[in-house]
Image 1 (tube, helix red, strand yellow):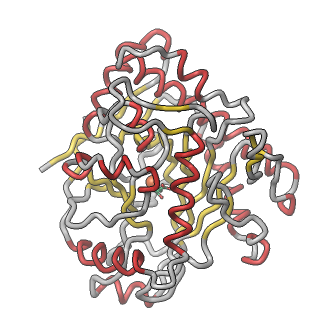
Image 2 (image 1 turned 60 degrees about the vertical axis):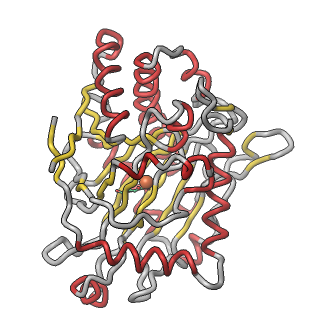
Image 3 (image 1 turned 180 degrees about the vertical axis):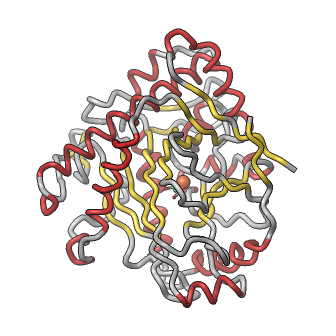
Length: 365
Ligand SMILES: O=C(O)CCC(=O)C(=O)O
Ligand SMILES: [Fe+2]
């Protein structure tokens, strides 16, 4: 069985709007993940952004702890307590910044409170993060406009809701770091007990633009029946909250020069379920896989803090940009702080058990 994963070339958008729009709509109604060519971002920009993230992640834990994860803005550092239950090793680490670094919210004035950057890395660091966000944001806006054109909706809505210059713009860039595989993890993997490096989830945002480092395999998607369960999207705090079992996983490996893009829960809500937010995970390394560190750079695109999104059919309750972030962020923290670790145990047992299932191959289109 194959699943069609499409590559859409978005170059010369003004001249090819309709063609790009219909290709993106097909990809988004079906698989919800696609590759983007012709995005215009040179390879050295990705290399520079990767280096910036690596520089932060290489700092000592007590330094990184100065920028703890803020569950309302979804910004900051997560990692030291993300230990998996089988071997006790750290599986995953995360650092994210928006237009104002990791600055929190000023609730009274409904905007970001001020800039906060890791000055320990020098002044250039912030500029690199800002430049990168600007470039990927442009790609995101093009894709969202194309989808709105395909749906017969006003593309000017996109310029307004995703205005990068607004003090209410909460879109952000993140770096995922998956440490090298330890001997204990290799042993656990052989007996099929190692959980995924990043467990199955759907993104909470409207759109995610993902840079995957060349050679860093492991990303898998599970489109299909599961996305029909729209009650999971109705719960805004859904991200990470439930454990999909017995899914069929399709590898979505990095392709040189292409970006990987996926529809998030926010766009599923905004289109009354038409565009699909798809489960994905980073599987545990298998025998014969590279044992080194893995990195990826997602850019999560969200509407302005007070911007309300709801589909024309009003199938889901309206939510703001702030809701999408804070409800998922706070659900994550609550789950992590559960002394019984109920969710983690369930996730690791059930997902670990389904790892052996043979994947469904991606068919190029
Ligand atoms: O590391 C990857 O390839 C995927 C990351 C991801 O799904 C996420 O950050 O939401
Ligand atoms: Fe994701």
